Length: 391
Image (cartoon, rainbow, N blue to C red; front, side):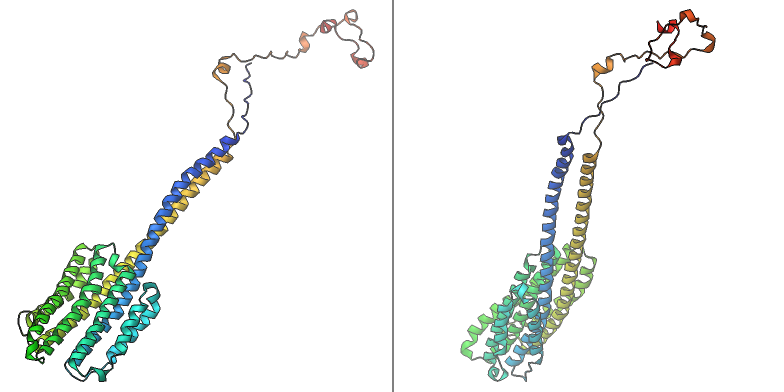
């Protein structure tokens, strides 16, 4: 009967058991690096979009202030009864927003300078049309500088998406500039009729320069919105922006016809066209701000979703690698298998044990065949045993 030799179990090897852990760490390290890089980029994009929404909030408050400032300037230049109620309310609204988000956007200094300028212009000091035109013009320049500061500090001016970039450029750059310069052009046309004849040449040059300066931003606004609609993936942007944009373009054409093609435009016609353009600009501004904020909100939601998926994927991958390493570390050592020489060696053969004798094969044993056994070596009953068994 062939009996295989027992297998010898290998003793545990410390390097062999630590190696799976080292391999797991080697795989986890680049995975953690990639996750850290992705997390950092996502966090940066998230912070940028969050600051941009703060900028949109600030721009929304600056809109009514722009309209009120232009209206008060036109009223003062026309020497009509002026009311600063709307302007005061707009100032308080901007002040509230600046208190809330001015630290993040670093706009406190700019706003403080503009508010000091506005508060230092009481009605009794602006009875002179030329003085009102000059004073409110300086305030408007400070207002446009605040627009630029908000766009820069919030990151809107560096937005990486085409549609949001063109929208912010239109609402924070072209539209307020066009509104301020259009009102200034209408006021200058009114003042030109009252200036002395000796200043007509100077006034004509000033009007020509102001026409170019006023109509340029308005055309840039139209180009920005067209580019935003063409480059966006949003199905709502075009449907919401194009209709008020068409209205603004028609009012802009009327304003251009009233003030752009004549050497001495009619003040009444230009003022009426300016009021119509300003009303269209208000409607367009609300739409642009709403769409810009919606796009930024959608981007933030997508970034939050990507961050969650990345964290879940990294957690699952890390758990799988750690689990695999622990499993390999705790696995029983493999049994030693015979070498080729040991396998070729013939197996050891053990002799079969003798079969027990049957009763029929036993022969009677005579007394002469018994051999004595020394006393003390076996019990009395076993002192005699068969001779053949002894030999």
